[in-house]
Image 1: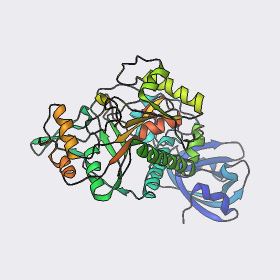
Image 2: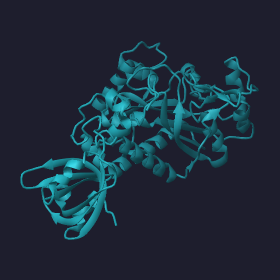
Image 3: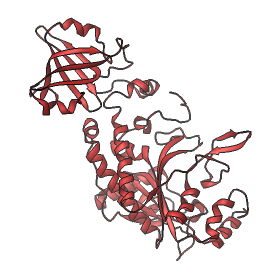
Length: 427
């Protein structure tokens, strides 16, 4: 029976079988070594008899090895396989586009992305995906523990209305359709079914951004729940979700963090909160600005770290003019919204807030925009509000942006599996 490389140290003196890829070969005068890589790490195999067999086992050839486990403090995990019987499971592999056995990645990002089916095997390059997987596990666990139901909503939709972002149009059996910009409308209506819902899935934004922080397709971690008082309840739930994500990354992706030299931050129990008007002052921005520029976000992030020792800071009360029509206004001053952005290390990570929940408020908000609540784009969405919806709110976390900020990646594509952007549709 096959065991994984990380299990080898617990089997000293036993005969075991491992299988994986030839990570590296080292031929010395008296002894040779084969380093095998599997999903759990690296294993060292000592080859004393017939070392010439290693000449045929090029890097990335898939092999199965049966041998006896011997203790060796200098081997990975403190143990290695001796007296091995090596069985190739494939023909000799072609030379990889980068040297996967090197501890660091010597190639530039275009080379890495162009050759992703192979370069993602590098332990450093794949680390971002390991962290993302752990973060999704933590998100699901945290919200599942709070009574949320996981849902999956359509990614092909008939209208393009939410948030005003550009959309990808497609032919749907001869008629117009679009790739969903977010599950916003669906997750809101599902509050009327389950009260608390979340979704992990792709969203699509046809915005012609060509920056280190934007993608045309990314994974969105969405949540929506009912019976709230205001957006502060949403922020508290968001804080619990991120705490769960960070804990899961530490527990399930510790090796990936170590490979990248990353230390996990903590999200404080009480996340610092600024009103939008205060945030503009701290950033030294024009008080009439309707939104925060990237430089403003960096300044606010630096303030939060300096004043509160926090990598996280929330900015609430964005102008209603810059928020979607379903956003609930601030009751004391309707110029501002009951919404927020959560900044992580000086970059917007999450947008969330309280939504309108009365049909009459939706009708007024759409009429003010010059639109009709009876328009086909809104018919099924507003049906839920005609039949009673509780005060509710929610948020959406961009998974790739979370991982890039956590790891300190200079470009979000470094931690994205097969990124889609303005210039890239393959591999």
